[in-house]
Image: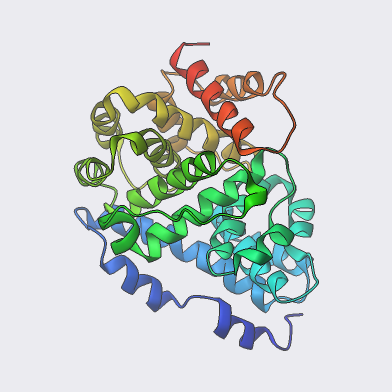
Length: 319
């Protein structure tokens, strides 16, 4: 049964639907259909936060999220990771880490959820809460960047600022900043209202040195959150120009989520085909397997970047 202090936790930690709608009202809205889909995605994530902070056990969370439509269930589990990380920050508990074990098919979207929670947690607490997987753990920094750009759009999108204060134990700060930019790129898809033209304008305001990582985040967001049709996908690939292969990187990463969570749909297939050189999801899965052959298991952000680069080149070179 839900925790008796669940309502208090929800009041403290869970954003209200109205708050999310207020934030998204400040985003571009060229297509009402696309805007509503992006809002729907976001509210499923918020629903996952609410479920998690009200719960008394992880088994309760898993049971509560199973009825969520397959397309949105990954977002709900991402939200659950946000909520549990926030709870763990205030206790000696490790419910977020346990959820990775108990709902392992949904672990990939949960890593950014941890990072979204870290955006509101003092950095001296991060090491306890940071995920343990030596490679995928860095997706938490992606989630951190996403949160900053989504909820503090003026500073991180309009003014193109970025947070440079990361804990020393994270290692090479330049690599960490690149991962955060991938999260900012994901947020740009929402801020630009899912419009290729709006997205291109937003990215163009950033220093060119950041474009590569921003485009990879766009690839993730377009593939996972969607909201557009084939014409928009083709337009986006053309608009990306030399960075089109980074859209393929993002689509490949989401392929892992969709296959593991058994949530593949015709939209996912269309995006992967468009961004990954006509490949099927099974072919992209093979690319992902190749990308980790002989990859160092050292837990560094540099190795995470090497993994991303390998995927990008394998996609671009037709391997």
